[in-house]
Length: 185
Image 1 (spheres, rainbow, N blue to C red):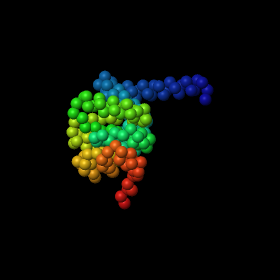
Image 2 (cartoon, rainbow, N blue to C red; image 1 turned 120 degrees about the vertical axis):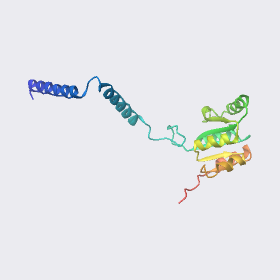
Image 3 (cartoon, rainbow, N blue to C red; image 1 turned 45 degrees about the vertical axis):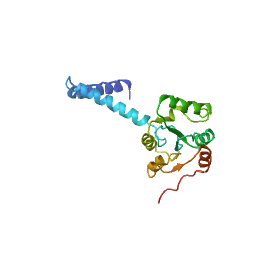
Image 4 (tube, rainbow, N blue to C red; image 1 turned 45 degrees about the horizontal axis):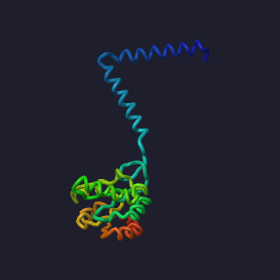
């Protein structure tokens, strides 16, 4: 097409668009149209920007399964390192004060757990066993290791695998030998 014909088509298209907009857009309908366009662009942005992968616990950054550990004196650095190499790990502890929280964090830090894959923001605290049960259920781990029998019984049927571990020495063995349970048919 020649440039004059192309220019004429552009003018006609602009006039047609202006006529259409003039017929439907006025002071009364303009805010609705503007907000509709804004919402549409935001929805399109979030649709294409979302992360399609991720793990059960919702961080969206790892394809590793989750494991959680809790209980009295079972925070074994060797076992936590082993777990962190295979899982995203959450530690759930029962404490009754901020001093106890600090003591748990200091114990994990001095053992080098935070350098070996455990993330500090994944160490969680509750003042009750039931609070720990709720946290663990929300995490939906593939396995939970704990030394508290009451907590383990509360989690059975709600977490795929619950391992009762009596001591930190036994946690190492439980972690090393743990294999996922086969899916029910």
